[in-house]
Image (cartoon, rainbow, N blue to C red; front, top):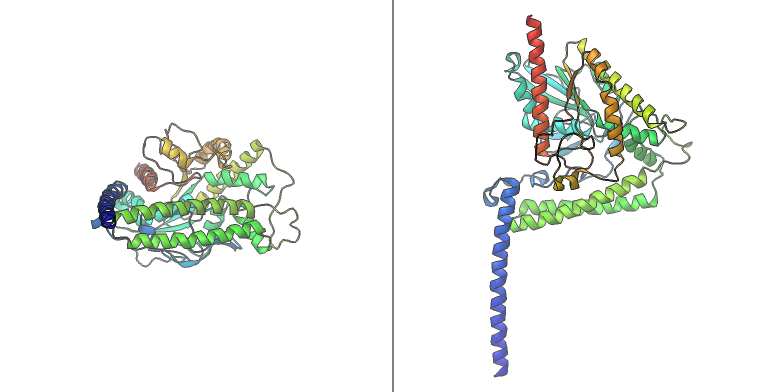
Length: 443
């Protein structure tokens, strides 16, 4: 009899537990539905199903899902990304290592095509991708009667880590290959001071490509990766396997709770991946004491330059490179626009939320001091750029009026909201400059 009572109590307890579990799951699903709607502005069950890993709503900035080492030496450009047909929908890393739908040199297939070349580093590369996808700059340009019926082709000649004079050299290289260009937009400023400063601290000539990108390739070429770096490589590869599995699971989720819980899991994996990458980069970026046997030659300085002299030299190279880009393009009547990019470490009137501060700032970054000292040095060259008729779009204050978070990392990159603000400002400025030129021609 006691056993029957015990069994009955056990069944009652089980029923209560199951009811509570169902209620918990219902509330979890309802909460996840709300969270999904706030994040994506659409209802989970009627959403457009993600077609690939890049459309599940997870920020994959800096996450290399396939390879850890994607750069390759290039005899003219310094380094490029490894060409790959499988980058993301609508894009590939083309035959010259640039993220684009096209191989280069691109030849016009229709007489009404208008080709815009975008030069610079990773911010410029992101901008080019965003323009191809959203056509913001073309929408502004179509307001000009002469361009309203044109088909705009955006070609990216930008890659993460590029800094002047790489943009100048790449422009001349492709012009020599008879690449047609109807307009050029060069977006830079940050890499010129941040990455050149790292060159200086490592006694590398400032005009050389970024030591942050070249030295790891040099170490690999010389077979000089440390044991620690190799261990980090294994950890990175294992993280990528788990991230890929998590992203695939998110594509297949039928419930909002599944999407929410899996996204938290994937975001944690991505956070660990990025920490592993930072440790790997620090380890493999260690300068070798004896490079006499290196198969790669890099111009060295005898000592580290003082900051004032180094930033003056950086700024001079930056300005001269832009002036020469303009001169060679002006010879063919190609409009050139130089965009001075905003960065969180250059203090403006912008007010950052506490949430964005945690994303956008890193007290240990070497970039902060470089921007604080380097941007004023670049500003001193603006009169010289104006004297040489450079169409400079100074965008350093572009985010001052927006309250939304715009930075996606503690380096320099913008999220979608930031890209929209930045793109609209650049588009509006370019349109106004072209209208002004038209008015002057009519006088």
